[in-house]
Amino acid sequence: MKLKDTKAIVTGAAKGMGAAITTTLAREGADIVLTARDTTALETVAAEVRALGREAHVVACDVTDEAQVSAMVAHALEVFAGRIDILVNVAGVTGPIETPVQDIAVEDFTYVITANERGTFLPIKHVVPAMIARHGGKIVNIAGTSGLRGYPMRTAYSASKWAVRGITRTVALELGKHNINVNAVCPGIVETPRMQKLCEAKAEVRGWTAEQVYDEYVKDMALKRVTTPQDVANAVLFMASDDARNITGQELAVDGGWDV
Image (cartoon, rainbow, N blue to C red; front, side, top):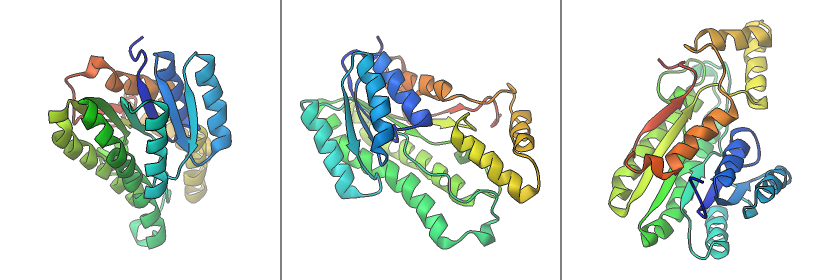
């Protein structure tokens, strides 16, 4: 197993990519603190982790609230005897869809920036001291291909994912001397209920069907197939393992060739 007996935190672990990432890390030997706001959904994923023979600890946490993040990390350190080997920042929001920049409410813009940027920054801030103390660790941030290129009608979301890349690169430079790898995985459109909602919202604005929007996405991909949560989880596993021991400050696109 690539992650035998490691200790991990996964934010946004309740659904979709977060759930797939969590069970994939557990399958490879990690014990995990699962955190999100929806603890009911977290318990379902935690049961899958335990069925794989690994520890699963559920902690409710809003990753934009520093007090909650601090308490969540403190709990992880307590149950894992002071060790956190892996942090995967998945939690995030999509924000306004198919909305011109002049029509985005400032409150909606701020909400997306806060959730996706602050929600990545705070877990890193509070986990890093424990990693430095043990001289090692892996941090994997979920960015997005909308942070690799412009994304019309998605100003808030695209800006937030560019920022996640900035956090990733900067923190990688700071923490390299402590043997801590910091990388980002950049999914494109992923086959989840969130994607269906995205297609429906875009279709409503355009006067299309959701199927037409879906097909438009597929047409723009070199491989002509939509990414699955497991595709993203496999990339995170690579970055969280010693297979990526000499990779840091990098972004790995998992998007079927949308950004090529």
